[in-house]
Image (cartoon, rainbow, N blue to C red; front, side, top):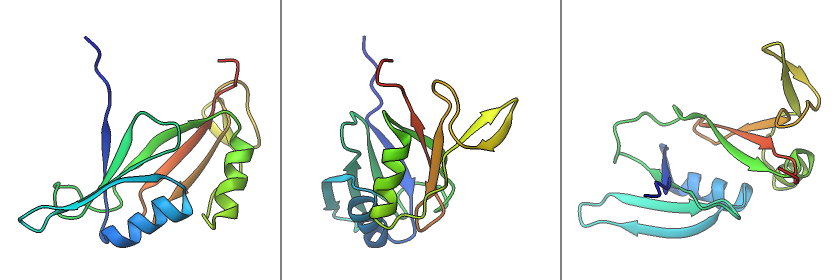
Length: 134
């Protein structure tokens, strides 16, 4: 039996603001924007090329906005991903890696080059480079 991760809930304080950030600034594709009869709203977005989506919620789950820390997006070129985020206006870190458990500036070895960014609520995302040959 396959177990596939389908969505990751992202707690936000303002769904419209978060939808704009993730779709216009970061470049995720809007799959769904629906309001239920009780007034609850869910917006589902998918990173380009990903089989897993996120859904933005306000008041649907018992999690404070801004408490999601560290979900990882994987790219083949972290410097190109950083440049694209910068072009879109996202405040993204410089490239960094870990050496002996310490965060250091610059590229690392295989699977050890990262950038990170936060959404308007403070949810923190990590972008990790995976070599095209992996």
